[in-house]
Length: 325
View 1 (cartoon, one colour):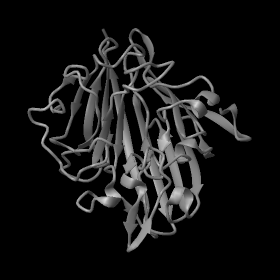
View 2: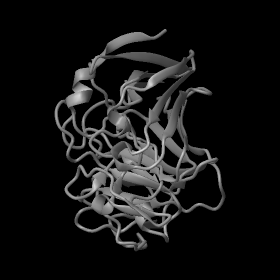
View 3: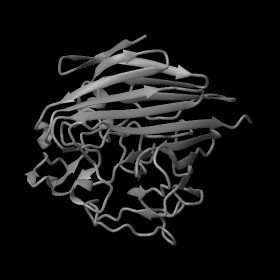
View 4: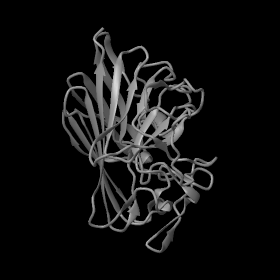
């Protein structure tokens, strides 16, 4: 059963709940946002993702909380790329670079609710040729579903009329304790390498090994253990196509564990250092399953180009468990 969730620029926004045994979520049509996700534990329900109480806070808030970022999530260096011999200049919104699709990216649009069932919600968006400087008319779709107990699956799909960079990514923030900061959360990443970046967080092209560095989460470690800020893409150790386990996050107090399974080559770890009110610094962290940042300008990276006749499909599956004690 959907319900009204305010208006944005005169367009009505709706909220739709989904759930299965042990898990309940709500999604709003503004930004295709995951507004709430609650996990049942022996000690009661725990809200594990950050969200606002009203749509106005999403419009004015920072940090892309819970949204689907696009047309190209993460950064494009110099807000410029060349594709098939033609130079394109996406609209910059972070200095001279573009972040998460520009100042009016997919995270700030009202999506159309295409389907709302008890265990599945699908939203759709049409992005015009030239939107935010990108070529091609893109038809995008995101499906949130609870296919089994304690599982949330997020699937983004898209087609295009012209070749275009495409990277549709969930920007949910996680706090498995339901409050406080995440510095005591324990993280494991299935990645030997990171994507090195410059001072503006644009990739240099290098993929350094994490061994002996504060970026090494190949064995479980506390987020706050090294005392540094994390906003970096991990290059996953993929041995096969399809869903692979890329990360495991464990709450400090709740007993909740989240496995992150993905079809994507990378996961961006962002520790929420710059989150503002009402969450506060480190109030949640992101594990953004994605194509590499600045891939349109880095031919050695896995391709992030979608062409006419193709269908992009990116899947993130979150598998939860909770201690019974």
